[in-house]
Figure 1 (cartoon, helix red, strand yellow):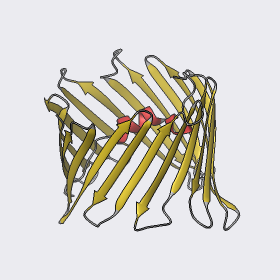
Figure 2: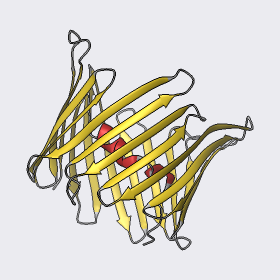
Figure 3: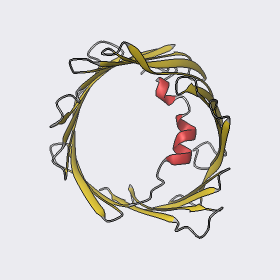
Figure 4: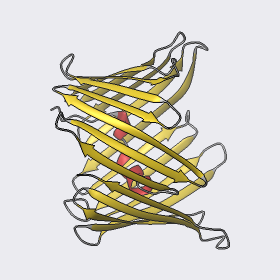
Amino acid sequence: MYKGPGLFTDIGKKAKDLLTKDYLSDQKFSVSTYSDAGVAITSTAVKKGGLSTGDVAAQYKYKNTLVDVKVDTESNISTTLTVTEVVPSTKTIVSFKLPDYNSGKLEVQYFHHHAALTTAVALKQSPHVDLSLTIGTPTFAIGAEAGYETNSGSFSKYTAGISITKPDSSASIILGDKGNTIRASYVHHFDHLKKSSAVAEIARTLSTNENTFTVGGLFAVDHLTSVKARLNNNGKLGALLQHEVLPKSLVTISSEFDTKALEKTPKFGLSLALKP
């Protein structure tokens, strides 16, 4: 296993997860089972407003190959094939979605002690190409990504970022949206297991001179229960409670309020994930 700087998508991921992961505005129920053949099957039902959707996903791993197949209530079939070490230090990912025959994508990730490179190509007549590169170490990393449309000969995106990671903290700065936004974040962990943390993020849109400042945190009440909260300068307050009702099985209750318009109906979400 290479201890390198990680992929470009890892820059700022800790702050993003603390501020967004597990926050819900709908009802979600999922059950996972495992067969003797090593197939993991997960059934999920989601209710958002008056609309209910669902899917069944199966995952099978054999040696260095991982196969994921998902079928939803709209008869869409999503398949992802992941193979590691086809070439040393690489991971190859092939994905497609039926009946959309133009949804296929081939991605190759290359890992080195001081670099990580990804190339993704859409498998269609006029492919879209994504390329990202990160150089550095597990402590310090700098990287960039770009998306290129071959049919128009133009860049659809370009982003650059830098991150500093220490055992008890991490910080990152990302220049995105073709240079129109700057996002800086800082995460501090209060214990070595990272079960209690604080996060702050500021995002500035250069074209409008608009700033968004968000603070949040994670606190472990005990070894089974944790709470999270976040608040931004627009008055949006979110909170969630997550409890392990059974080993590996979680119930999550979340809500979001607009503190500047308390007459508005708050958003509530509920999730129950059962695993054997």
